[in-house]
Each structure stands twice: as structure tokens, then as C-alpha cells.
Amino acid sequence: MNSKGHLFISLGKSAIRIIGGIVALVKKSVVPLAIGVIVAEIGGVLEELVDKR
View 1 (tube, rainbow, N blue to C red):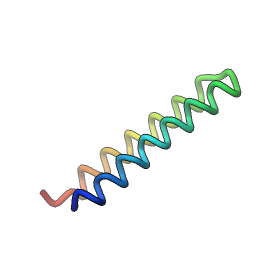
View 2 (view 1 turned 60 degrees about the vertical axis):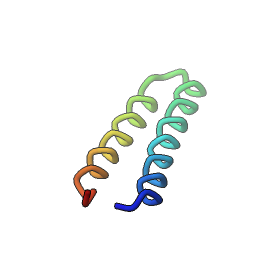
View 3 (view 1 turned 135 degrees about the vertical axis):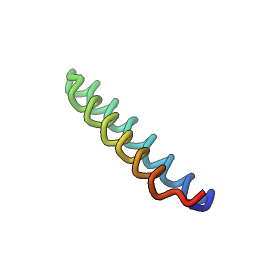
View 4 (view 1 turned 135 degrees about the horizontal axis):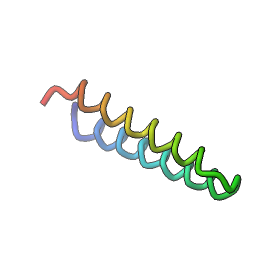
């Protein structure tokens, strides 16, 4: 994977975590935060699996 693709995936994972955190604060529940972290981590694992380095 080129560095630009890696950057976009990393930014996407960060955005998922931030959105999960904001939703968690608004709803006063940790469930959206947990879901955001889990989804971002799955994205990180998939990112590493398809990385051709």
C-alpha cells in the first residue's frame, strides 16, 4: 500500500474513533465509543493484512 493510501486509512480510523467519542458524550453512554474503537481496530487489522510491504 502506498503512503497516501495508508494516510487515508489512518485518518478514517481516527475519524471513526472521534465520532464514536462525540456520540458517546452526547448519549452519555460508552457503547458508541466501544463500537467506534472496535470498528477502527478491525480496520487496522485489515489494513495490515492487505499491506504489500
